[in-house]
Image (tube, rainbow, N blue to C red; front, side, top):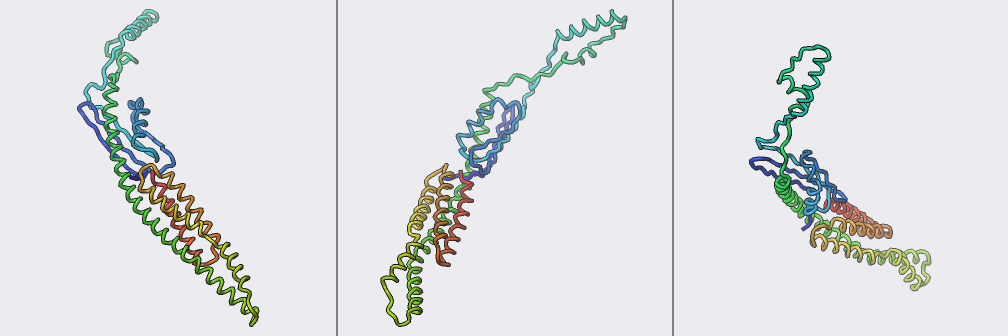
Length: 292
């Protein structure tokens, strides 16, 4: 099943101690480009997050937003630095003796001195945290892939429809070729008769001119290759995922054949058909840019 590179996924995991929310959105990109926004507390898991994402996504620009909320009552603890408090008091006594000042220090005053009392976050159980984060990420990735697959099915149907239409246009080019030769021969004979009057025409010379003209405008090889590319692209669309780059290459080859047909065209109808082909191929290429 083909996948679009456009998608969205969201998941939330919550227990008594924490709540983790993961949101993902993706757009088309030539390679896999991942941008992660998350709290500093989770930065340690960035490599693991990227490795997990690769199990679900191979191409596209993916933005991941992770929020973390600590619900535990023991998020932080109060730390008392007794050694620093003792050092502060020692220097205050020296100042009292040196300058003859009254030592009016109180506990409430000393506690407000820098680094005497500090708030300290509790140590995190990294294994348990990663387990919850992985669960939320996996759920978000699964939903992200689901939306990509839905969009991929729509792209597949649209592309197959466009390819079937292009096949019909190519068939018209193929059908028109012998008509062009017949019309050219008729015009050539009429012009020769007009120039020679009642004199006998050289049928061999007429035939040789028609052969030269036919060789000049012949698009048989281009038509065969273009049909083959169309069939190849349809088969590739049905074959599976991870085909975006391959489809883009096939589309380039299709465009090359259409350009050659247009350059050889010596007929207004064939020129219009070739322009129609190029227009449809360009539409196909635009659609392909969004396939993983």
